[in-house]
Amino acid sequence: EVPRSLRKALLVDQAIELMPCDAVIAPVESGQTARTVARSRIPVWVVAAGLDPAVLQGLSFCAGIHPHDLAVEPACWRDFARQWLEDFEIEPRHALLVAGPSSMNPESSQRLEFFDFTGDPQPVFGGDVP
Image 1 (tube, rainbow, N blue to C red):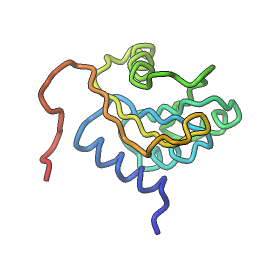
Image 2: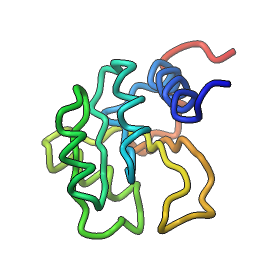
Image 3: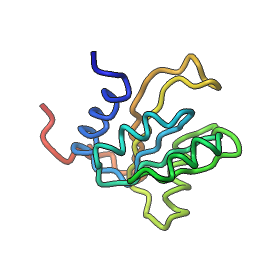
Image 4: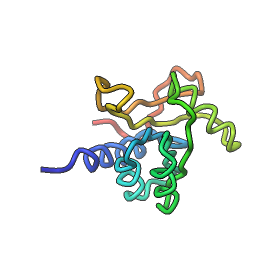
């Protein structure tokens, strides 16, 4: 069986191909998902946002990952993504959240959430959708 983190990484790769993003936001506890997503060499930063300095320090040595130390988990990941992009002087257009259950949110679903900051009502797909 394919591990859950690898399945997420494959989905992220496909999502980025169909819907180009400025960054992938990955809330982390262990860093496994961020590492696996970054290993696929997607053409954008994987922002590994977490509360554990030791985990974030370990992620700082992984290519393609930008560790981001959180004082508290954001109430709204969409707002976090927009602010992160603005802080790094990237015009916020699109971001992808890769998240799942956490110790703070154990009932959360595994999910990919696409954030569109353009206000454009047209679909953002970069390819043909089957």
